[in-house]
Image (cartoon, rainbow, N blue to C red; front, side, top):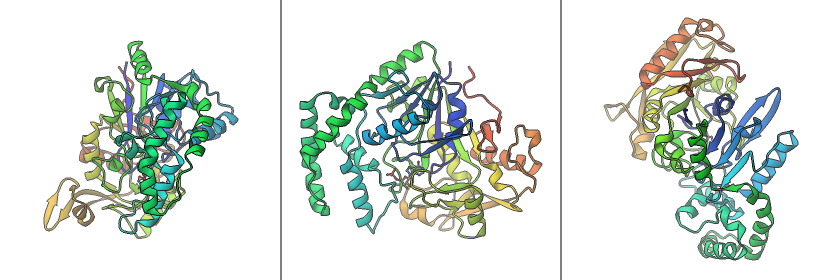
Length: 430
Ligand code: IMP
């Protein structure tokens, strides 16, 4: 049986929600392996809108197991609220349908405060984070001082963990002019939320390995996009986790050999939220049109997304670093009606041609995109369900993308509706 990893192959917001939902119907287990509630997925099922941030998309589908892996950072209070909201919409969430890895690090209020204080005080290198404490929580994980889900079960361990954490944060907060953390208040708040989280705690690595042995299909649901990866993204304008497909293994405790298919989600143009380099960014009417037609506003922060032409250099790179077997191309219909479309095929830097994005930040900021111009199409691609429904120029655009990124299209999504999907290769096929 095939296990599939879904990763965003640009800067996030590629339309993963719909594809993950589409695939999750065919999966038995859906697992998150990185990120936290900085992510945002909107799912529309039978007319009902579900907004998910921390919960795996599988929770809204009956009969599936949803899993939050150790690679995630989890805000327990946010999770409790999200569970209550989704439950109020009639979805059943129980320890049989949701499991949280016992070794998952917790995001505490002090992480969000630190994230926001840094962003507001750092005029030199503002990242444009979601302000949800993601980066500071990952720092504490690597710093070996974070509170993890399993620590909630034992009051003595919890107090020791909090004390260790506060030695570090006390010093930081004094430097930033933030008030001292109320230690006893924090422990009391954690003790209060503990009984709401602990019923879901499980050795997720073991459960997933058992499911694998039973031949169950596992869908690993990535958040953000590969260009926000802590190692391979546009550092430091990145998120604080590994986003690329290899993280599905370390972020859940299943071996890398368990991954059979990597599906990269790719938008037919490019967007980015927050600061950082963006070679094909548009500041003209075309950019504005992409934003308006594509409804490019963040699900989590409501921020307007920056928009630009399709960058084949970047997607070729992210397909390589994630080992993408096939892409799901989304939002092609947003390009309907453009007379001409541009695709970036390479960069020019100091008189040299580059076939990849350089690592040095100053070079990333200075590369000039080299474009190929393609004829647009006037007919609508929205709602197309087969290649025959697509205008010839749209097919040429898709084929050219495949060629440039050296990766085939497995799925083509032509509207937010689940049914408006052209299936070329089934990622779950044996
Ligand atoms: P953080 O993940 O909140 O630390 O934010 C770091 C960077 O990642 C910022 O540029 C955010 O805008 C971006 N980011 C984080 N999560 C998402 C997402 O789900 N979609 C798009 N961008 C994101």
